[in-house]
Length: 334
Ligand SMILES: [Zn+2]
Ligand SMILES: [Zn+2]
Image 1: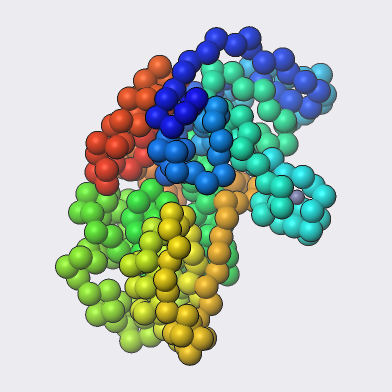
Image 2: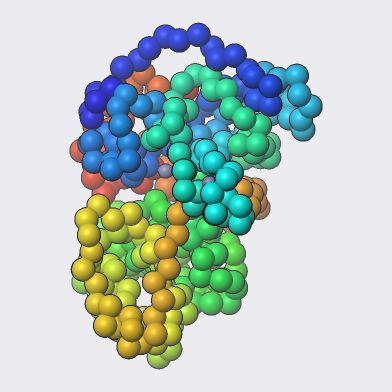
């Protein structure tokens, strides 16, 4: 992407594989909300030109001389973070919030190319029963896994999720897969509500016509939800989260905010609520996401709306723009 809305294809040599790297033939690239911000020139931390692509699956086609557990033909996905290893977070097992974090596709070269040379330690093997489509969804599913873990152990808890876009949907499915007692999701798009249902979410409600507070009590009982995850990144849903939280509840802030939100911190204080941020994931979250897919604990086909060939990257963005909330995940196929 050379400028917002402008994509150029360039022929470049196949990258050389350095010591400690592998060469991956990219098969699928998922397009996500942050990519769309870059497309519109609204991503605050990305400059142009940039090679996009951070949700991928592919096949190893070449190994460097260094020993590794990989072999040619292995099906893999890639963790897109580049971290410094020196800052406080890196030194304390929290490298996903590295002070100098660079993410491929945003502040570093992304994977939207036929071949991508990458450090071994960023490559994770996919079991054979995982398709390339599903492999490219490990990244957003890892976002969901990490977000849930920020709220502690999910087992036997009642979870409320605001927003049934790709991330909200995956958070709900991951919550089910990680042993939640029941999951309720709210959304204003009937299209997305139906997909959430197809994915096995027990309680899906349209917050335009149904009252979240009443539905919460009807379904979860008077003690409402044990954990709330805001997955939209706007005022309305953040307010809904705070207003409907039982006293002392944790609210995980998963949505990415395009604008500064105005929320009632008075309620946060008075009801001893906790607002907890979450960013991306760590390697263990990637592994958990792969496990959830491998064990068929999530349904991923309903959330893949459309595929576009690599040459039609721009058409994919136009399609997303046109369809608005009538799509979930759009994939580039190589
Ligand atoms: Zn993404
Ligand atoms: Zn660091």
